[in-house]
Amino acid sequence: MQERGHAHPDFDILHYSIHDFSDCGRFACNESEIEYSAAIDGAASATNNKIKVAVCGGNPDVLEVVNAYMSNGLSPFPVRVFSSIEDARKWVTQTY
Image (cartoon, rainbow, N blue to C red; front, side, top):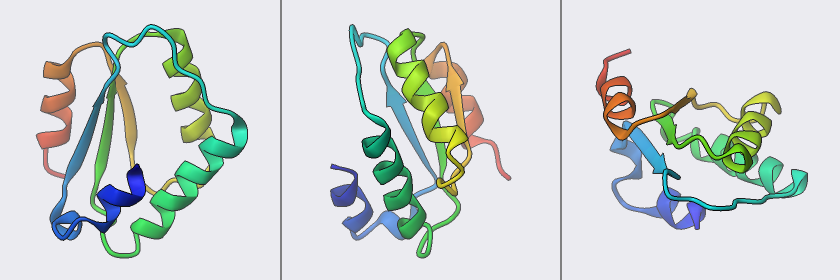
């Protein structure tokens, strides 16, 4: 799915992405899928390295995956976790 987003004609002008998992009951990815996702983002950053990624929600499954994604060192994008969409929007709309 993220490949479709990266292929979008407006990807090069994208400044942020908010992923809302507030209503998520369960979320699971294996290590290989997490590494693949980060590597895909790394390749996409060749055309746009200005994207901030905000993740909303406190589900432990989501937090585990996000922490693994952030700690593997492959993603070029800054990623932060927020408890609300409002806080996420504030962060992603701040200028660098």
